Length: 96
Image (cartoon, rainbow, N blue to C red; front, side, top):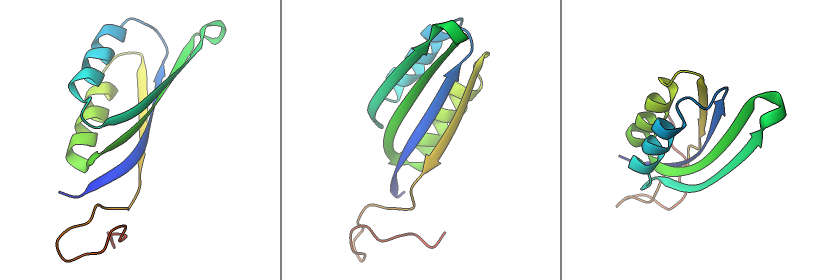
């Protein structure tokens, strides 16, 4: 599998599932490069952005598990950049 970089936006509309969310993040710590949280308490919203690097299966596992939690929305954007393989140059863009 090829590795990709991406950004995942997580919107929390209530704090009911925060422990489950953090547990999911911990179980995917191998692909999370950075994390930033923005509490907007006066609006009843918390925003978390994640920078990730991993294969699409692993990133999909993270977003899928987060997306099934009540009161939470998740969206992701992935690059087409892929890591160097035996016969390719670094930074080659996939045609998919």
